[in-house]
View 1 (tube, helix red, strand yellow):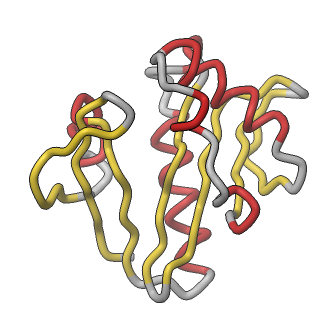
View 2 (view 1 turned 90 degrees about the vertical axis):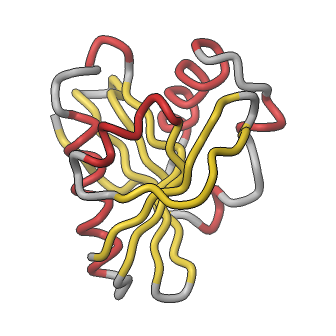
Length: 137
């Protein structure tokens, strides 16, 4: 398995469709936005099989990890944590000093284990409760 930056994000989109739209029931308009073109996309794959993806954005000195998802058979293997660590490393290399994300409430413990701290009140995003989280790089 490798984690790489990809220009052709069709495999990232296929995985996001499977996880967010088909599995979690997020609507098409909520999943697809106009930020993909400005983002750095990471793809974990085995051959041509997409296993996980993350979308990275730089906003000033802060980096944002978004659209992080892992294929169902790969959950619990450490791939999600590897994607987060790689995302943080890439954002730090781009000059970011902090990283933030919008976590599904059910995943807060996962992100806390990677050093993120939740802040602010829970909010609804596409029908799923979320909280903002961040950490220094």
